[in-house]
Length: 320
Picture 1 (cartoon, rainbow, N blue to C red):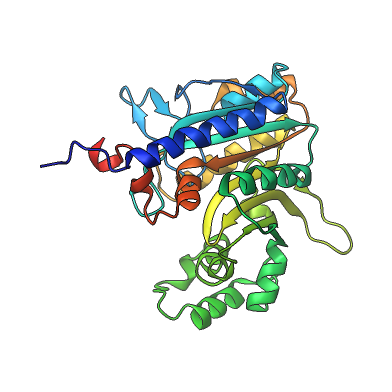
Picture 2: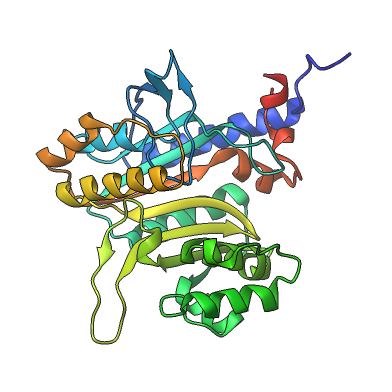
């Protein structure tokens, strides 16, 4: 039995170490401060699409992201910051996911999310050693070009018909149980993501308000619907990063968390305590900033041509 051995080769462990060193050098050149925040918290992620691990009879939770802690530092005057840390999400292990994984999260004070995308493109192209610039497309543009529908205006029946036509293998079941966000997600993953170029990055930006999380919402105008100022980054069809123009309004942050808790209750999911310290920090005032989280295990997979995330982790979930 060799189950005790690492699943990553020594060469890949060395490449991981070099990637981390290169990331730290990138931020050192820009005077971005490296920080640490607690991995265990009295509160949990309230997002209904993300599940937290609980410890100590549910009194402490492993963080799914260092976001709340880092925003408390921003509110306290830290300036630009980044963190490389382990995070945990209670999902099944698979080709692109290990329940314990390594995340790079960073925030830039005064940056628009467009500026952050440009900086992130430079960082990722350097780490992946890419020769071609990234493609940039709005969420709306992709749906119109590839599926001939406007995701912001399409009604439930239009989305159902589109899913039936383009994903014949999809088991729809009770069609009325499908929420608009679920339908958009399945169309994105099955029909749009596979179209992304395999030799460059793809930035997708300006998401529906229903997918805003803690991103700022840009209000509707005479020519444009309200949009969430957030973006996602792909290499080929592999999602690498998720970024926001951060929502800094204290009341709106509290409303998002309350809405998420209500959704969790409706979906009969475990209800988690909200982070009172984070909400207090927002009340004290967080500076305008944009932020992004990057999955470093997936990034290393892409940089080294590996097919499974277990190949770039010393001891993945099954051997931990």
